[in-house]
Image 1: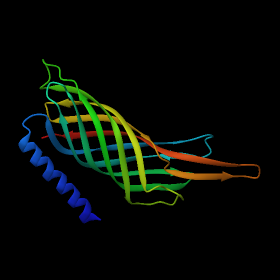
Image 2 (image 1 turned 180 degrees about the vertical axis):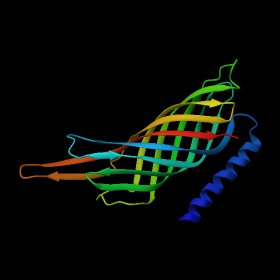
Image 3 (image 1 turned 120 degrees about the vertical axis):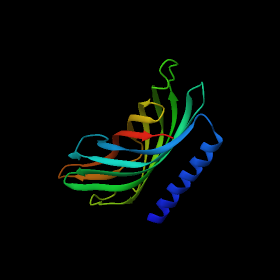
Length: 199
């Protein structure tokens, strides 16, 4: 598995380098890292106690922004570690995450070389690689939808904040008691704060 992850990252770096040599403007890539803050949500009644915790993420990102128009896209290959606790049962894991975003960068002529705000949105998918999973029924693939904003400084440093809405269920759990049974569908929503250095 480590060899596969290394090969994928090496391939992305090679592709980025090749495109960078051909595209004089608009294309950039670089390392990206940050922290995540989980916020579990459920359908129906809240019948569980969730202890949400911070995790971290890191990897490579690439973007193409059309000159003058300011609109484009970015894609990232990220390692992410997330953890939560539901009713005393641990959920934590290492994920290979691929977010793909439509991105709009606002270039203000007078200060564009110093600061450029941007917004983005798009889907992300995360594949679980390993981790502690004592809570039954945890999904191995998680889909989400990202919304975020940020600022690019001196044409290189990008600082962003985003929120991911969980699309599919993280776990499916049935609570029962003497009178009734309740099915609770738990989704994994989370905040992400990141910094990237673009070349």
